[in-house]
Length: 544
Image (cartoon, rainbow, N blue to C red; front, side, top):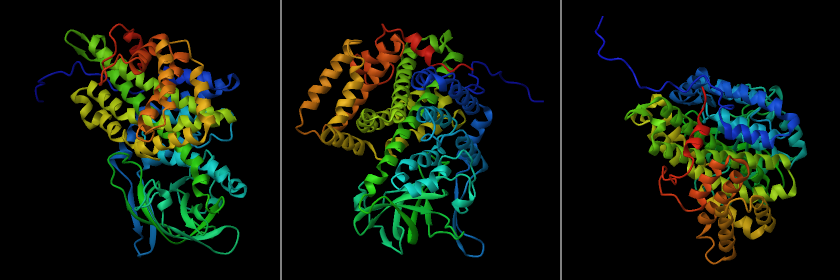
């Protein structure tokens, strides 16, 4: 036997075997305040069960396997027949199936459904984020289909089903289905009105044949897709099933799978339509208006997905610092490291509080809350997704060289972190959408001001930030060039107001001092040293 040259000491144990939900104080408190008392016990039980699964060694292994064995495209079978199928590792199906059976596509038809589903999405995404794409699009397809009551009656029960069945067959023969979306094309990208895919009517009852392409079509193994194409009256929304009612395959030619920076477990594809059968959703020429509610719902999931990445990365950083000793004591007790961890924790908690507040607005479904969402969703999507990458990168650095190796899981989080900023419209698209809401929908600004006004008088820095924001909104000269600045300020003021109202004083004080009061540097770890940073860090710790 070879002689032992050293013993392993001063290494943090893996963060495993814990409840991702109950160990997240910011998330559990958000659920407590936004879910009706009569539903809380049920919500706690289902979220804790999901949290234990997400923190288990098994789910972590599934995440590793799904990313180490990315999907593979099979365009033809052995006989030369076109089949256009995507093969996934069994771990992918286990992750996706668990998400479906946990209700992550079922928000629209149950009390408190959006908050419960948002919290679950935030929890389960921490196990592995790539499979969140089909979960998100399936959930988000419901409001678009509701523009056509007949289609909604046919498809909604299957979209919100908590039964997962992976094989391709007619939707009528499946207890549950998954949906994808195809909007962008090569020549236009986010400018979907430049789309060239054509839709020609055939027969009656809203049937069409599509000819064209989609440059990005995620989750091509799904049972159906909502796509945009040009009809006689203009851009129109269509439902494209993968398998037709008679069991034959619709023309859905997957040209290739995208080779992406991250999101490796999920298949994103380029597809071609050539006489592809489709059903019209909504009126001709109203495609953007029809699909916009789907877009808004997926944008909220971009916020929640980024909040999940931030939470997991910060939990890993704090966990490492608890167990790692350096220069004579635990890393977490070092004032400079404590400052970094507290700063990261503020970013994570602010993202979580904002994401759950938006989900609660969906549950309320009042005119005021719908107006609030019109402004708050693009602002949140812009800012939270922008803050994700620096938060994950700094958290990785807290683990030093250990964080830079694949076995830590941190590189996968870092590769994933830019995605949500790009998905469903990148930064400029969100800023322009926010400006449109300001210019065309006065009720949106009024609803936002009412929301942040509920915290007025509680913190002088928040009050000053609201006043400065109003001054900036009063000046419309060059407003497009200031779109990102406005989106950032609106998101920060909103986050500050939520934390002042609901977070512990040490959290809201640190957030307002740094993000709103200007006592902050340009990197994490530059909070005022006079703050109660130890309490902020302890609050962010995941108890194992």
